[in-house]
Every structure is written in structure tokens, then in C-alpha cells.
Image 1 (cartoon, rainbow, N blue to C red):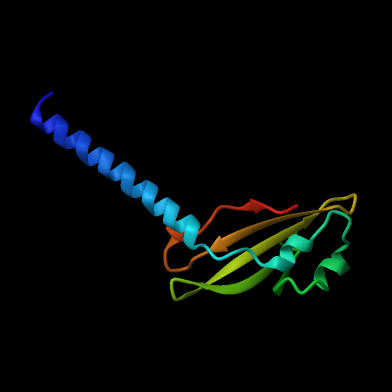
Image 2 (image 1 turned 90 degrees about the vertical axis):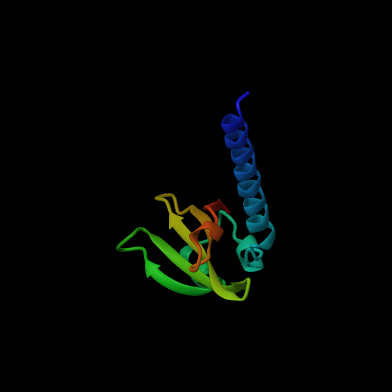
Length: 116
């Protein structure tokens, strides 16, 4: 194998290792999801959801089709937030997804996690 190929492969392996370490650090440093969100269950009504102290409520049901709840936290000394999206179907059942948002670095933000 020629020297340029070995250098390229070495740099590629180093890049893969760095990306893996960064992803592991992101997962390890992400603050825990708010405990109150774990208490949600399928049979809850919208009124019960709104009274559950889930965070700051943004009523987007009429415009976007969901209720948004935001809970602030910190990560690495910066203010971050967890967002909870609650949707309701025609049978009255709810679906909830949470997401961690780090405003300073999008790579530290998480993907949507299904809660219900």
C-alpha cells in the first residue's frame, strides 16, 4: 500500500474515532428528561395534560396540531431546553415526543424520543 493511501486511511480512522467519541460525550452529558414527563399515560385528557406541570405551555393546537411544553435546564454551563410535543388523535388518545435542544451547538441536540 502506498504512503498516501496509508495516510488517508489513518486520517479516516481518526475521524471515525473522533465522531464516535463526540457522540458518546453528547449522550453522556445530555441532562435527563424531566421526571414529570414519565408520568404521562395514554388515557389522559387534554385538561389533565395542561394541569400536569409539564413546563411552560405553548398552545399550538389550532395552528400546528400539537401542544408544546418547554422545560429549561443547563448543559456545559449553557441554558438548554427539553421540548415536549403532545398530539391528540380523534379517539382522544395522546402521543408525546420529547427532544433535547442545545441552542449553541446543534450537534449536541438530540433526536425526538417517543414518550407515549
